[in-house]
Image (cartoon, rainbow, N blue to C red):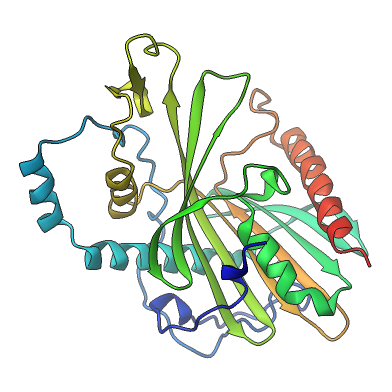
Length: 311
């Protein structure tokens, strides 16, 4: 396990400061730093669909690159990354409270429960899990932070490379993987934050986008295709520029995260995914049936987490 994540460095970031006047559920998030304030900004459009815009473009001439460096400074990118994470954590905290929204419960068990609801007309899936491992609080946080997403928990492609460190607890991580059944590589960009709101409460928030790099059609020509099939010279994809565009233009799509709370006799883990594109049965228009499939996948993951921390 990466020891770099074990020690969380406290920094003064805007996403550390939040307010909520709502009464939070006792077993979800009961007191996540509700005493502070947050800027009143419109967060409804923060997850806009930018799929029709190119991320992968041919390399620019050197003079154009220099102009871009002047146009977008590191401070601009850091400010935008912080703004994005502010909004992600706002929604995560709100939806981690099972009292917010009408729940369709698909699992009720003494060890946890799974429910689906709507927020801003977007699908929200959430679960709460009880782990009787008070001494494993830090290990639980590290494990949840390092995983790519819930559905790849425990897989071999979890490890990623930090390509941006805006603050010690706000980073962008890039991962790549290839499925033997598909001709393309998948490059995942994840903006990730770990925020300790108290000694007993930690928020892990992530927002991601996947870029597909088609290596089949143009393989003989020595070219690759990026998003929307745009051909670019092989080995000349400017991933640094892509990462910058993703942040500055708010191109992240999926949002998910965990609120981990240490209680007197257990550690509670609340998971929320907002507008998540994962569907185990994408061809099935029946939402209820699809939620049953998602529940089955979640139960499988819950059992893996429980098994990982069995005494």
